[in-house]
Length: 130
Length: 130
DNA sequence: TTTCTAATGTTATATTATTACATAATGTTA
DNA sequence: TAACATTATGTAATAATATAACATTAGAAA
Ligand SMILES: [Zn+2]
Ligand SMILES: [Zn+2]
Ligand SMILES: [Zn+2]
Ligand SMILES: [Zn+2]
Image (cartoon, rainbow over all chains, first blue to last red; front, side, top):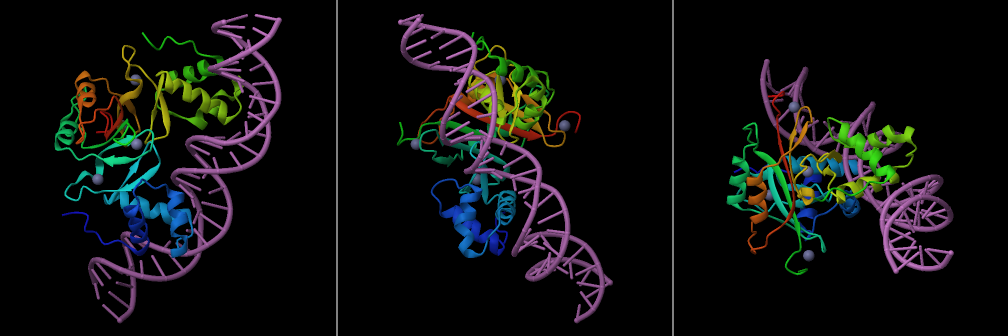
């Protein structure tokens, strides 16, 4: 379940673009690409991005200020995300490891506090770049 | 060892400011604060920040575009960082858990790849805000 | 001293993101 | 249906974050 939200026109246009992209897309690159479809202003892009992030259709790669589509179709990881990022070619892969997500969801800080929301970005070299 | 690098004048001024701050500081807040000390331009701040991050004296909180001093005096975690962030008061605490850092350093992705560099940001409510 | 490198100073500009306000579409309830 | 609330859109302006380019200076090192 989840993720069956209906998207509005702008949200769908922007999601489709990100979903087709082999690499994370930046907001203004998205804007440039959707101008021919009538989305003319940054705010229109950011509003769609905010919503798409909120419902878990896309994720923001914080260290890159870029967005990728979620391909963890089965999960509720909208707010518990992990990625590997290649420092040469900038390829980003979403990690879906139940071991990792369990470990992090059960991690307790020194006050005994647990966190269900987190973002983890691993950096290294991808297969091609090694 | 490490972290015994000598800082230049600008680096020291900016580090001292961040180190005294109880919360993460943003680049332009730093700029505003150090203008009376002769640091007048954004680039001077960003250059010092880049260097301080590189040598591990400070860390960037990617989701907030802000910087905090490292207080893990003993460790080499300049490039393997974890934080908890309060979503109400924005308090940020650096997590130093050898269990967590070992787990992440030994984590293998589905290609068997390990990563010694990572950034993890947990989100939740701090003690005060709960 | 000469040379090399890292750091600095300065201006301009690029990139990323939000505020403010008006309008339209959609959903909910009476 | 009408009335109302909520969400999404359109548009312009601007704020906030970050870098490019180039000249100069300070230190290290040979
Ligand atoms: Zn995902
Ligand atoms: Zn690569
Ligand atoms: Zn640290
Ligand atoms: Zn708090």
